[in-house]
Length: 267
Image 1 (tube, one colour):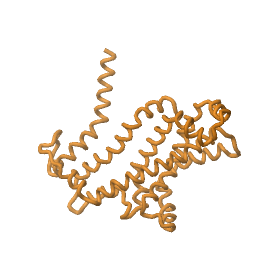
Image 2 (tube, helix red, strand yellow):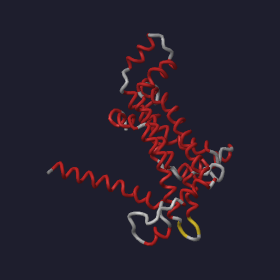
Image 3 (tube, rainbow, N blue to C red):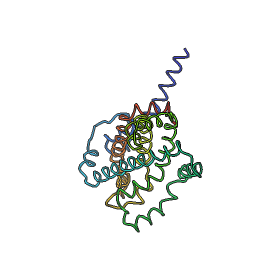
Image 4 (cartoon, one colour):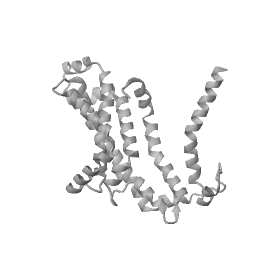
């Protein structure tokens, strides 16, 4: 009886989690008239007009590709910088190491709105405004400390004797770091990359403030569904479904690393 109650509770919990996603998907296949006319749990007539509009509109396509580009750049940059930094914080002791580590984490305590205007003025002055690099580098302010914090926990789980053994065997530090050490913390890299990707993908304020037309992100293009005629609910729902696909693909490819990372690392 107790097990049955737990299963029912778990089923209700999963249903509550999946209901908004289901509702978003079925809305993307409805007409705006049907969406606003009343409550229906299934489209009366499936329409693919909203997806057709997004795929055939160059502005929508450009916005989606732009978002994927700066998110990928940010993930690669953040993890690449965080790897040696996390190794240094864990393996070495230097003056002010704990203070520097705390300073890195303190960057996560302020909302992105605090940094919007400084980044805007800086990037406009150096010619990075309205480029994918502007958003990718701005997101590093948040993702690098997060990746350092996560990776430092995984590196702490690797015995120092491995570093010493590799040095005795004649490995140079770059060779040891790339060929031996990185594979040992592969799960941590997967977890860090996942969180960096998700933050950069869903962050809106900096992405819209630091771009105008050439690098306008997908989330900014979604504002085109607002007009004097009202809200285009079906088009907005179709765009929302498309925004979930990259995140779902990332979760699928790093699912094993994430599962092990939650069990082993600092997450």
